[in-house]
Image (cartoon, rainbow, N blue to C red):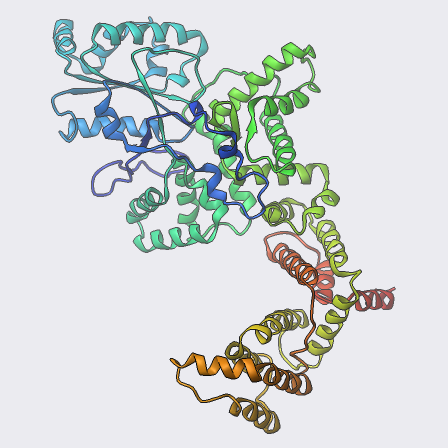
Length: 615
């Protein structure tokens, strides 16, 4: 096989083969009728499971086993799911005697059959393929049921040829019903009914299949790279989602093979993946599909997907009913030129567009009966970010600063912008508002600045503030809850060579005195320690706190309320997101970058003071 940007063909089977066994769902996901709560349970959850959106609860069976069970099989799947490769594998296994060795395999590309000059029937076409001496020889083979007929790509047949091809397949499979038939087609691509064919679906790759594919792929060039590839996938969940598609997994392997890493700018990788699904996968195989979109160029398709993605993501709709997404599509296409604005016509057109996106590109997937989602949450996030950039909707985006589910959208938006200055400035302003009205939190930030400024270190002031921010909150919690953790944490942080020089002798003496007050108990005698702690723990903790405040200006008992701790956590997470955007592969002017670094985790009074000095 040779797909995408491969330099040369690669073997499917054998010692250097890349084929990975596929699994089959014997019940189509789009035919399921689960309880609504089961489908929508992930929607609206802040800490949602990304992979839960693509999770299939149906039982999987090995592909070869599914073929053995059914004499006539229709294998459905999304674009790039590995349907054609599976048929080729069946043919090769049959030739090698590993599968149905009593049969002769014949592989038929239905597009080639449909477009052959003279429009021969299927019997004539097969006789030409296998070059038997007489048609009578072929008829005997077929009548004895000694043929494995593999019909690939029903969805690739032109609309004007479809009826004739369908009739040929039905008549041939009925006349020679003792043979084994396997046919492939994209999900939702054709409206047909094959009464005697059992419909099954190619399942997405799971983590084990992804690992096997990667090992097979890189075994040809660099086996060590396979381990690094899998490790990098596990570190990057949004990219890992795409690997469940064999086609996109192939793309990821090609990209990773060049630099032993994924691009720093993930939006470029996602765009390349979308280009494959929207354009390259069909064009490289010289397939022209019926144009069911109404005046939609590739760019307009992307605009439509972007508008739907942002609308659904804002409403926490990871799954949406068919009527809902059709209404979004209708709102988009009604404004295009030469579109009939009649509501009934719009409804029909919207359904046609939805089915086209599902069948031609696989970017919408029917997860259950009349319930859709984007094929990958990664693509929904990408298109949402694309819409934000196109419409300059930064003010709306920053309203979601404290929502973790928006993290990837922020990072993608920053990386897709010509200049991220405006977005980062608005983010910085919005972050300050989180704690600006709380006097105690502003006092805490003032202490943080004072403490950080008193330390001599080669690190940037912002990095030192982050260090003491973490220390202050962790230490405050530890001193309240756990004695051993408190002392160890206090000394470990204060002895850290990156922040402090060696402790002076007086502080060492004070800490030793405090430690000497601890009762000598064995690790197994926790009851004795517990009695001492109940009696003297509070006084001991206060001694430690006083010493730490006096000598290191840390350990203050801020006594934050639950709400204040929540605000501080949101403030910290939002600042981390800002820094992650700043350090991503986005373009930021030197002045804006310096301004953000200089004012990170500073109180409002300090920020305003610096601004006044500049003015």
